[in-house]
Length: 123
Image (cartoon, rainbow, N blue to C red; front, side):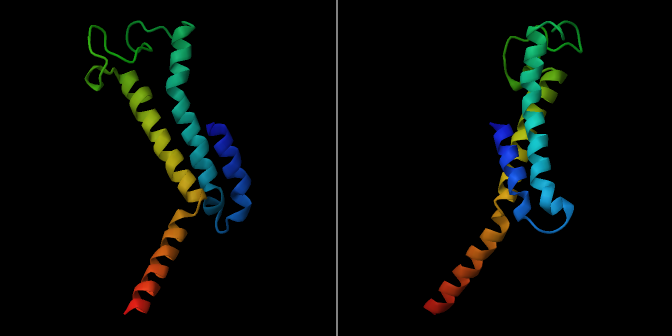
């Protein structure tokens, strides 16, 4: 799904004007987001195939050994990096890249100007 979003955002890059970053920034953000979001799933696959065993640190286990709860308090360093940091940062970048692609700031600015016009017309 994220790949489809990245392809669409890359396709719409021809509509954007400005510097290289203005034109391709949303595409870069969405590609980076996809990679970050997939990090934890990749860790799971490597662990399941026993290519990265859950054994002693820095093993692939997302929880500390001996911790009974599966909560944030029990996350290992690998858990914090992959499960928490990478996943949530990825979704935040996907959100920003998608809004940037939709030109949301310009649209909000237009709404603000129209609102001012309407309020001035009422007075």
